[in-house]
Length: 125
Figure 1 (cartoon, rainbow, N blue to C red):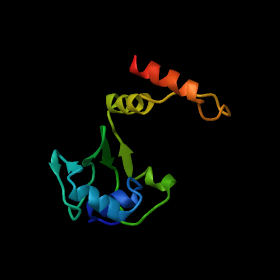
Figure 2: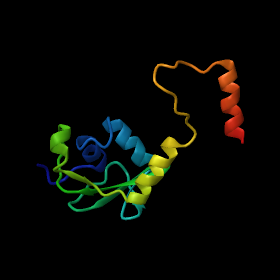
Figure 3: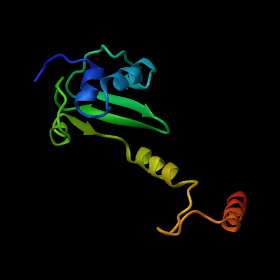
Figure 4: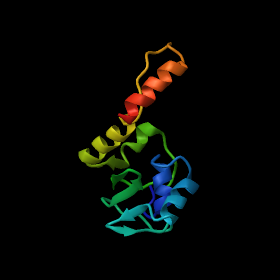
């Protein structure tokens, strides 16, 4: 384990981001904050820090349990990071995922022109 690791490297190592450049871009765009202050990719993480990542429409929160700069499997990453995102944020995420989508039976195919008009009529109220 390392004692000093950049925040972008740590987020990549514990699989919060798919690539390190994606983690660095999130920091540069001001989407990553520690203690309410946006951070640069080069900032070093410390144990038990709370990292907030703005992923519209919610803010995900993580706690640093251990520090490592090496990419690891998802099974091992659980020992290094704890997801402490508030339940109301997760409920908001689920609500936005379900809003605006119709449920169709599997295998029914695309809607016909008549069905499409009916769907549009129902959506507009």
